Image (cartoon, rainbow, N blue to C red; front, side):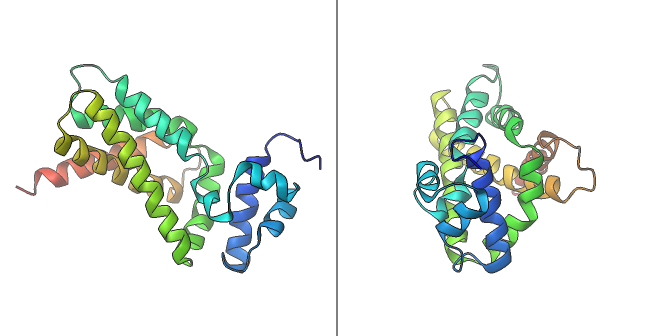
Length: 191
């Protein structure tokens, strides 16, 4: 396979998740990931600084889509309505590959403290991006921070229900929006 063949980034992610599942994160080398993906080690390093960063593949695009969706929400939108708009926009990048990798990725993360830390950092980054987009709309910091936290939690909860659904053609957005509605109702009961 040519090292310039398109899709190298996606192949690297799939190869890494497969290897993490088969032999564990710690036992997997960059060389093995590159070999499984059909690329060179230098191609790996053009896409990722290290194997841990494979978990954050797509984080920049996801953050951008979340913030664009929040920014483009109607001026009358509440903070959570703006977050819902961001979740709908971000859902456009969640496709069959994400859904297919979800169970294996979940298992790999559960088995590695290092991947758990990276997953937590990814969530922090997405939450910060949403909070910044909300404050740019004029939302006060505490409200923006809370709405962003609920948005990140809704994304994660929605991803779990979507990936575990027995209807593989379902889009991701309804799952994320249902999770946000559920969290909104739960937060109202806090008193």
